[in-house]
Length: 275
Image (cartoon, rainbow, N blue to C red; front, side, top):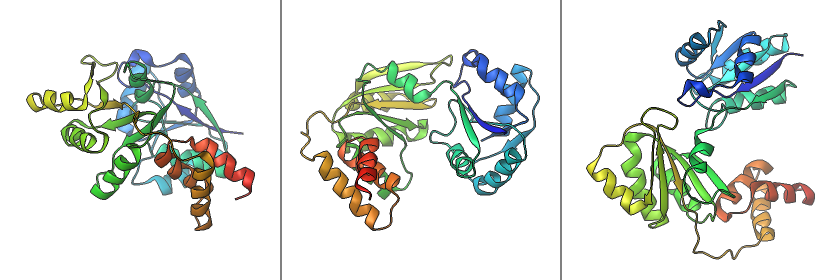
């Protein structure tokens, strides 16, 4: 049976492409990509010619139907994103779910990840972390996410564009206080830079210098607030959401964000309770 291959691609330095990724891209029948122009450049660099199918935020529903149908008809497909590992803060997430729901085997071909790479060189604790991705552009949702994240004891990971960085740092200072932060930009590229400082120092730094490049922000978790809520309490809150119609996985995810408990632990407890 044909498969969907989730293929990681370089986040900057083309030398980071893996041997397995190259072999997979050569072997599949077609490639779906967030931006086919970006992927075409990578395939040209690798000397690979494959049909490209567009799969992005604005066409993901119809493209899921088309791509899955082709795989079910016997064509192997690789999904890639513009840079890094697909399906992480990326519309490929929907395709993977759609394929899984229709009995298509999904295979990971691991590659670079900006989030994990930045965490590894941040100098902040790495044992437990919470990936937050991009903050919402809508103020209410943005502030709600920051409020929830402010309570999490684990190291926090955010993505941010240069033109939004200064506003984001100001918002973080308001909700997090003056925590330690690592600002990683242009990872693996020519102008790679890692700044380790406090949020206040970062605000002062960029008051004199315009941000450039894509950023990964690694922020110290909440080390001051004692955990007063138990896992049992968290599961009860998640159960209330489930009884109101929310999916177990979504309920576990939401409560995990506001409590600091693992989504997996809450979800497992829900399953054991038969909720």
